[in-house]
Image (cartoon, rainbow, N blue to C red; front, side, top):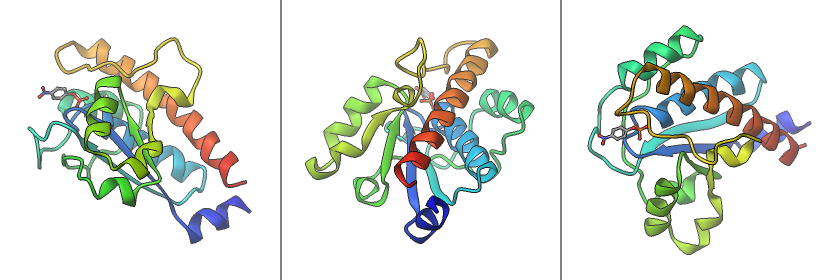
Length: 163
Ligand code: 4NP
């Protein structure tokens, strides 16, 4: 039954990181793949708090490790978080605590309950998805591992909420 409910009143998720070229596009691609696999119609997008890479495609290091595991980044373009996102999306999911702080600074009080940390949706040793931008390939693989795990938890959370 939850399937029908979600389709009628589409659940929406916005993933947020700093640049919107590494972690949040990865979360968008992974979560899109997992939601489709589960037959869940969810409105999914990603954005950054920085705005320095607007219009760019995701970082090649993110797409390389993601595509190796079958995720598709083709339609993703960098954009900055806008205040209207807080009204539009049911979940605004930040990759780290700095992103949460940046979001809270611009989020109207009535929508602040929508902001959550990505890693809060699973049991993991990490509280945050660490910024891989200045590191090597292993960091991008680790980010992908964490995002896959948290995405599974978010899928379960949404299923339970609409069951
Ligand atoms: P992201 O990584 O927040 O995961 O997209 C970064 C991308 C760009 C920058 C920092 C982090 N930057 O400083 O340009």
